[in-house]
Length: 537
Ligand code: GLN
Image (cartoon, rainbow, N blue to C red; front, top):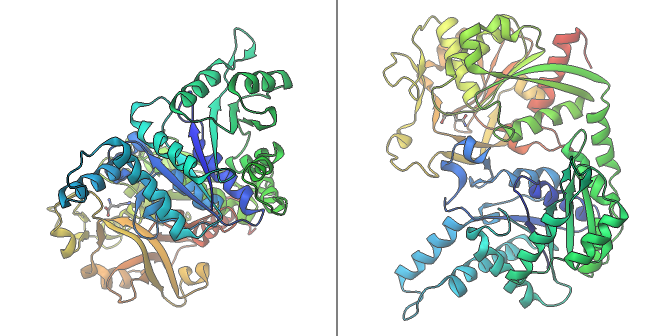
C-alpha cells in the first residue's frame, strides 16, 4: 500500500476534495486500485446534525454513514465504494479514546494527544488499508494548515509516513497563489508561509498544487520551488476551471501530476488515459441539446447544500448530450409570487430533499403546478413527500393533508413516522439511513427507467408514506411503483396520466456518476428536453 496525504494551506474552499478525487481518477486510469479517506478536525461525530449553512450537503454512504460532501467527490470521480471508515472526525477520535479510557484499556497511563489521539487516527489509516486492499490510499486532511484543531491529524500523518519509510508515503499540499490586481501579479508569499507552517510541524511537502486564476509562469514556479524546497517539476498549477469540475483531472494530467506521484512512490504502471473523461467534458461544454429546469429548494444561494443533486442533474445531461440550465428557485418565492409566474417556461421541475417547515408550502405548490400543467417532475425524498401531500389535498380533496413533521395535528397524515421512529429520542445518526432494496412494479415508468425489478438506493429520512392512504392514491392515478421488498414501505410514486411525474423516498443523487448517470436523472432530463422543444432527443 502506498499513502498520499493531502493537506491544504492559506485558505479553505480551495477544492482539496476535488483535487484528491481527481488524483484518484488519474491513478485509477493507470490501472491502480485507489481508495480515499477524509479526516475532519471538528468535534461533531459526523456532519449529520449540522445544518447546510454550516456544512453543505451531508453525503450518505451505503452503510448509512452520514459524511462530508468530499466523499461524494471521491465516489463520483473513482470506482471506490466507501464506508464509515473513510470519514474520521475529531469527535469520533475522542469518543473512541474516552470510551477506551473508561473501559480501562489505558489502565495506569495518562491519556494524551500524543500518542493516544494520534494513535487512534493512525489506526483508522490501517483499518482502511486492511478493508480496501487498494494499491493507493489518498487521505485528505480537512481544514487549513495552522488551525489548532488540525494539529493532532498532522502529527499523526507525520509519524505514520515516517514509519512507512522511503517511497511509501508522500505529502501533497494544496495552496493558494492569489492574483493581486493593484500589483498586477500573482503572489507566492502566502504559499511560502503556509509551507513554512507545515515544515514547522515536521512535514515537508513533496508536491505543491497551486490554486490560481491564471497561469503560473516559469519564474513563479522556480520561485515557489526555491522558497518552499520542492523541486520545480513538483510545483503543479491548478487553475480555476472554466466550465466544469470534471475538467480538473484533465488539467492535472496535463501538469503530469500522476507521473510525479508514481515516480515518488515508485509505482510502475501504464500511462493514464482519460479519453472517456474528455468526452464527458465535451458533452458539458458543447452539448448538442439544451433544456431548462427549475430547482425548487430552500438553500439555493448556497453552492454546497445540494451538491450531489446538481452533479446528478449534470450527469443526466451528459447521458442525453444535453446542457441543463438549472434555474434555482427559492420555495418561499413561490409562496409569495405564485407558481405560475415563477415556474412558467420550464422544461422540468425538481424538488430535492429537505428538513423543517420553511418553504414546504412553496414546494407543494411546485408539485401541483407540475402535475396540473403536465411538466416533467422529479421529487427526491422531501420532494416525494410534498408530491404526496399535494395529491392528497388537491386530487383527493383531503384539504388539510400534511406530513406530521410539519403539522402533527393534521387529520390526514399522509406522511408520518413509523412506530420504530417514534421511540427514538436521540437525533444523531437515527434516521432511516443508507442502502436499502427497492422492488419495482412491472409496467411502470420506474421499470422503464431502471430496466430492473430490484434496485438498491440510499436513504436519509425519518418520515414515510402512510399506507392507510395507499389505496386511495392508487385509485386516483398515483401509482406506487417502488416499495421495500416486503411491500411495507412506499419508495417510489408516479402519476399515470402524465408524461413524466416520478418521486422517490430515497436519494438517487448519491449513486450518480459522470460515467454512470442515474436512470431517474437521465429520464428526467430527456423528458424536460421533450417538454421544452416538443421533440425527443
Ligand atoms: N424531512 C423529511 C424526513 O425526515 C425528508 C428528509 C429528506 O428529504 N432527506 O423524512
